[in-house]
Image (cartoon, rainbow, N blue to C red; front, side, top):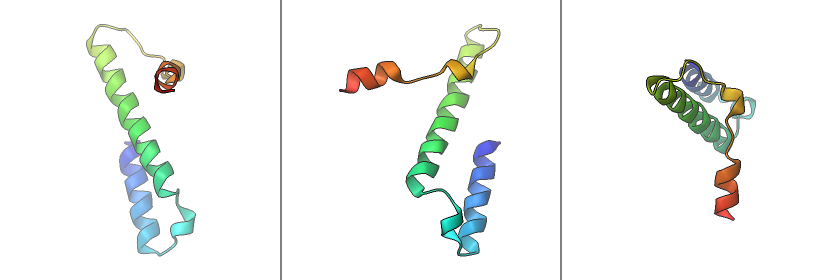
Length: 68
């Protein structure tokens, strides 16, 4: 999975003390949250009977409008 690859990359970079060659901690955490959320939402939609899920259509526009 991509999350495991990301964790492995981060672990390798930290071991090699090359932290400037990895994402910022905020970006890495945001990417993990996005990947996990997309995977879980896709699984839920497929379990609910959808034949396919177009993840490119995912967005959080409504959430951002409501948070302002």
